[in-house]
Amino acid sequence: MNKVSFFRSIHVKFVIIYVLLILVAMQIIGVYFVRQLEETLRTNFQNSLKERVNLLAYNVVEEMEKKRTPEDPTLEDEIRKILRDFESADIFEVRVIEGESRKIIGTSDPNQVVVGQRDTNLRITQSINLGEDLSSILIDRKGDHRIWVLSTPIKSGNTVIGAIYLEAKIENVFTQMKTINSIFATGTGIALAITAILGILLAQTITRPIVDMRKQALAMAKGNFSRKVKVYGQDEIGTLAVTFNNLTKKLQEAQAMTEGERRKLSSVLSYMTDGVIATDRKGRVILINDPAAEMLNVSRETVLSQPIVSLLGLTDTNTFEDLLEEKESLILDYSTKKEPYILRANFSVIQKETGFVNGLIAVLHDITDQEKIDAERREFVANVSHELRTPLTTMRSYLEALADGAWKDEEIAPNFLEVTRTETERMIRLVNDLLQLSKLDSTDYRLNKEWVNFVDFYDRIIDRFEMAKDQNVSFKRQLPTHAIFVEIDEDKMTQVLYNIISNALKYSPEGGLVTFSIKEEEDKIIVSVSDQGVGIPKENISKIFDRFYRVDKARTRKLGGTGLGLAIAKEMVNVHGGMIWAVSEEGKGTEISFSLPYEQTEEDEWS
Image (cartoon, rainbow, N blue to C red; front, side, top):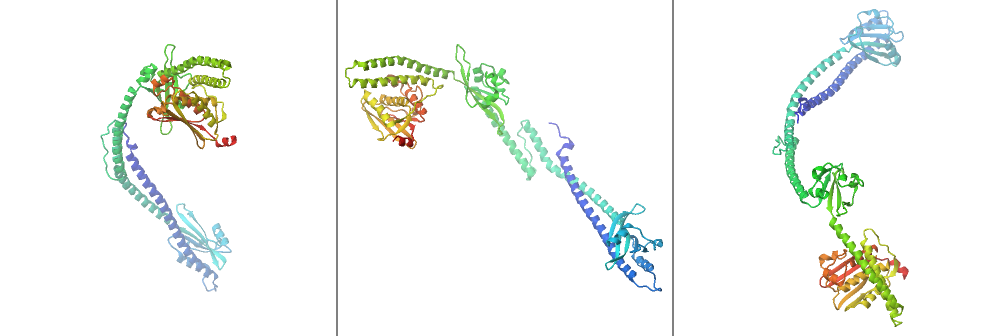
């Protein structure tokens, strides 16, 4: 860093500012003081002369109004005598003028030539006419001195009978002001000199620790945090020095922490299995870890500064701004004809506290195996459904033939066969639902809802299972005695109850009890099926509604389960606007419950 020049240093600036402030303050005070002093001296000078002129006017009025005899001195002689007493060093000339004729009847000038002549001075005429004092400052005839001119009317009562014209030497007042200004300028110079010396000393006490802190800052910029700023006192500068030392310590700790975090981050990025890519605010790659480079089959050196949309192969579909706004994951399919290869990219925007976008983080996950598993499960459902459809169709045809007359009992056989045919058709619809479940990601359920008395509907489902059961299991019904009307798709809800009750029977021991119940709440009903089977471990309860999940795989396979029954039930209940859950205790049994929306007003209308 370059050394600061002398005239740019804060030391010189402080002294200059300090001296200028004193100079400005003194000039302001001086201007105000001189102006007021000049005004005071001039006013006092003028007031003093006006008082003498008023006294002169009083004496002149007495002489002008006095009755004279031939033996008495003339008016001009008396006025001359009065003016002789009026003379002083400050007065240049005094004249007495008669009012009507404007004739000069007396003057203080030793040369009495003007006595008896008519005075044509405009100021005297205006003063007599207006009856007021008129004054001004003029330059004398020689042009080197200022004089004060005063014209005062002489009044007898309210009548103006003449005027006194005065010319005074006011230059003395301005001469005194020049002397005062000279004294003030000398004092200002002495004060500024003393101020400059004091300013230099004061500036040193302030700038010395600042210079020290500057040196410390330069040392910190070079990575040296061991140096400390000397504390010269307990004032604000001293407090600043202490704070600067604390800052140095905090920066040293922060640098050590940052270096540690950098090493940790580098270690994490190196050993994590997910790929990580970081960009700058323009979308150019500034960091890529080894897993990401391996996933994309690129080298780290070649992709740095490359646009991320180009690196990920998104040039045709996305811009960098699109990635900044992307809230969901992007699936990157790099599969070939020989081998599938799919990545999932999650994006996170790097923002400053001000909200300014500083870059983007992309995390890559290899989901090829997961996609393979999902594809295999979907294929399994499709194959099983296809294989089951043919025997079920054959069974339906056979039972229809029996219903046409193979059975001789004309009262029981038709009803029995009709129920069997209905159940067979429902099983075919179940297989179709398995196909629909395999396409769940892209297809929505379409419900054919109708208002149904759910108590009767539930009762009929239980009857079918009670008639068809081949094991020693008791049924217990805890159903309301009044009608409860809900809007459901009967086929879908039949499938839900079939899957739940089938599971309860599969896992019920010999002599066990299956309990069916319906509870009413304010805006929903809760339908439950509980058994006394082996129960479900606590850690597995949340997973039993997942597709293909089996708690006991060996037992489920033996009983013919596919792991889809409860998953299908969950989907059906969700599209009806309800929820499904399980409560279980190992060795005591399991209770499966689901809710359905219920409006009391609808029940009232039906009833």
